[in-house]
Length: 527
Image (cartoon, rainbow, N blue to C red):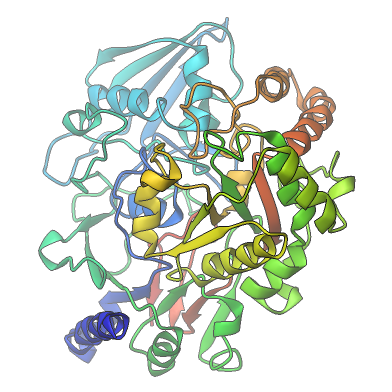
């Protein structure tokens, strides 16, 4: 009964937001979006979840950015140069950059922001290993001094793979990296309207009148970020049927990443467009907590690989196989670093082997906590399949379901599972996050507990990843890739659950939807 009242209040709030829409003559200046989840974390240095990245690119900006093919191009940077020895990089900011409170963006803001970001992100941590120091030259010019040449500087500063290196005000960027920034202030093309924000129901953004776009055409996350609507509204509506009906009636304009089984009422509607936007498919995964038994033992992690059949997970989460495929590549099957080396023994389900490995890992029936959400139905469906498989071999698993924001807030907790921590969670990663040993947050197995939630640790895997990242060219990187991937298959930092193409849905009168690593709302207009 409590659950029914909760959903009822959410639907009522969403309906009220739609009912109080502007008059028809003004509606072409408002883009109404149903996002994939509610936004609860506003700090993209702190969290790598997709809805936080989408929020960040509404209100904030980055020094560089990735185009559709994941090449790095300047964004906030006007010009840059490198010294002949490739050790000193000098950057000059574009003129006219201002935060939403009117403060100019300065070198101090950039240096403080990038320094904070490097403490949390896998790409940033790698850049920090090569960094000797950052220096302010003047208000608009700053430099990076490296310890040795590094070939991924621009790529790193434009990352959309894990936590995003957005530029905060210096006062915000001095916040401890383990504490979330909640101001929501940036220098990007839209401004968060806090007065209208109803957590769990409604988020509104207005066009930033002071934003000066670049002059280049849009290409992925690069080029001119032109706000072609005056206002963007996010309507948080968990019920797919309600969304489909609103989309059909023109009450909402765009639906972010619905499950394919939710598309039935609209798939043949001539007024609706269904397309893929990212360059690579996304990837489902089950992340385990390597700090606590049984998954601190590699045999328990290997057991999951023997136990799980990707087809079960993808069929439950995405239905028709035209949307998904089996893939045993940590760096995605259609990416530039695709390989399935070392995965041969896991391609056929072996429940007896899985049960044996759990026993050898010392598992004796203790309760294991799997946290998940139904707010993102694909993630909830994968969790249901995982729990059913585990129970079938006698694992005592407890499925704890909550909203996605609660799951995300629980992920960083290193406490024992019975004291507020966790043993497992299901999630999905963008292909752009997964596609490379540099960007993949799950295969960063650097020990010390500073890597991604789950804190997988393996010195040998890190030595092999280091060899890939220090390789002088692509040929050498390809040679370093196979031994790295074989080691990952041995250590199993993530149980791979399959690759899929998420659908994005919008009305036919919505124009200029950008294909890229993250869904963005600049360049979009309505006719």
